[in-house]
Structures are given as C-alpha cells and as structure tokens.
Length: 144
Image 1 (cartoon, rainbow, N blue to C red):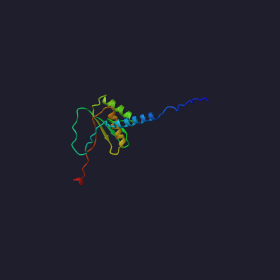
Image 2 (image 1 turned 120 degrees about the horizontal axis):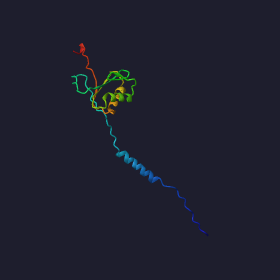
Image 3 (image 1 turned 180 degrees about the vertical axis):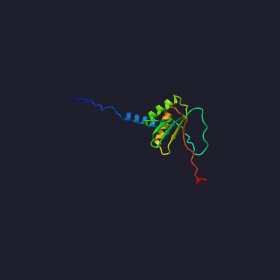
Image 4 (image 1 turned 60 degrees about the vertical axis):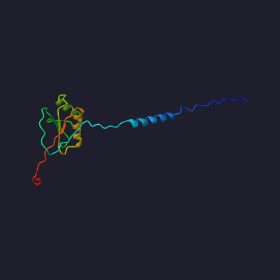
C-alpha cells in the first residue's frame, strides 16, 4: 500500500484582504478631503439709486454687452463672442496692468451667460476691480 501524497493545488491569491484595504483607503480619502468652493471675483452689486461714484485717476476699461450677447471693449466691437478673444482684447487694452478697473455695461436684456463670461475673462486675467454699470431709474410723474 503505497500512499501517494496528493499535491494540493494553489487556489490563487486571496484578494479579500486587498479589497478590504482599498475600500478603507477610499473611505479615508473621501472623509479627509475638503471640498472648498472658491470664488475668484468678489462682486458687490451697486444699487440703482444713489450718488454717482467719483472719478478715479486710472482709466477704466469698459466691456459693453448688447441684447444679443455681442461684446464691445472700449467701443471696439468684437467679431467673435468667445472668452479667449475677450481675454486677448482686455489684455491688450490693459497693457498687462490688471489693477485697472473693468466696467461691465450690459443691456438689461443681455444673456446672463454673456455677463458671466465677461466677468470670468476679467477674473482669469487678474483684474480685481470689477464694476457693473447701472443707470439711475427715471422718475415718472406717478412716483412723486
């Protein structure tokens, strides 16, 4: 009676501990990650009624937006309405000086996305002095 020893087949690598470790790492990174939302431009919207602002010594760059969402920078109408062209125009007019104030004068019926695009272009270039132009409401006889 010869006893042969059977060879035990190796069942492969046990993946259970590896999956446990990866799962724990995933939970750790999800819990420890901080989700902070940073705003690049702090905009204080002006009120419609009030005194006009005083003139500044620095000349400002005016970005005008019409009802269709077309841009004009300091009176020069732009052929395209994309953010790269707007950034190029702002950079050229500012001569690399982001301390100049930028005034966004948008039509009342201009698309909100066009106004946000103009503000984003100024923010990407480092302009921190951003203003929204408003006009004072006209008083009618019924208001008196």
